[in-house]
Amino acid sequence: MKEYELTIEAGKLHTRYLKDLWVYRELFLFLAWRDILIRYKQTIIGVAWSVIRPLLTMVVFTIVFGKIAKLPDSGVPYAVLVYAAMLPWQFFANTVSEGGNSLINNSTLVSKVYFPRIVIPSTSLIVSLIDFFISVVIFAGLVVWYQFLPSWKTVFIPGFLLLACIAALGIVYWISALNVKYRDFKYVTPFMVQFGLYISPVGFSSAVIPEKWRLLYSLNPMVGVIDGFRWAIIGAQSNIYLPGFILSIGITVFLFISGFYFFRKVEREFADFI
Image 1: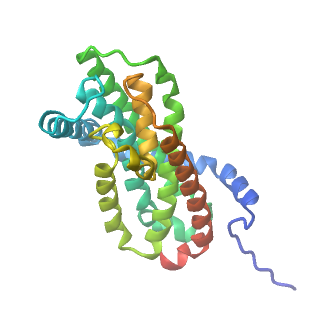
Image 2: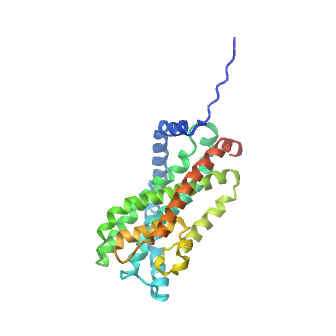
Image 3: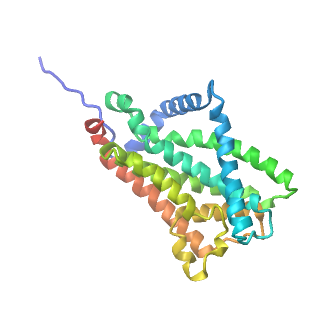
């Protein structure tokens, strides 16, 4: 009697892999819901931290850049200028921070059960979206306080949010895959996020960057996203630097595609290192 050996592995063709992602969509929803419960259930600081962190950052940046450095405010309250940038940045930073360590935190699941491993880092997007919508509510209170009427262009915000999702996932795929093999990346990620906060136009407007450097500055993919959010919320007072915005989109798409392919390339080795 012949003996057969059954080997279950990720689809080698990308079309097959995409089908696997659809088949395991319920696992994605389950893991996302689990992460939400862990973050918010029976906690006070979970929800409070989603409010306190962006508010404190806004206050510090408003004092440092608006009051002390007296940088241009585009004709709007400086707190509104900063918080309009905090919305996409906080979403991006939360996704990268949570997603970068997600495979290590779920090592038991990764080493014992087959499913497309890319599902795990992708779920960090859902928890970050919850924080994002909480921040939107706080921002609504802020514009009421300052009696500031947002532009009608806010209808374009979902498009810029999608761009932020693509940028965040691209970086998460790179970092989470590298973190499995090189564990010291868990120390590098917080530094990268903190460094990114200061080199991104969160506490100031991109307009303060000299014209000759703006295209180079736009190599940071979050520059286009943040400028897009400000343009959508503030309106005519905040223009988009079109060449830089197009470059940011190109960098974002490149990060996502290259991150996906790199993750797929090393995915089969995860069980060996975890």
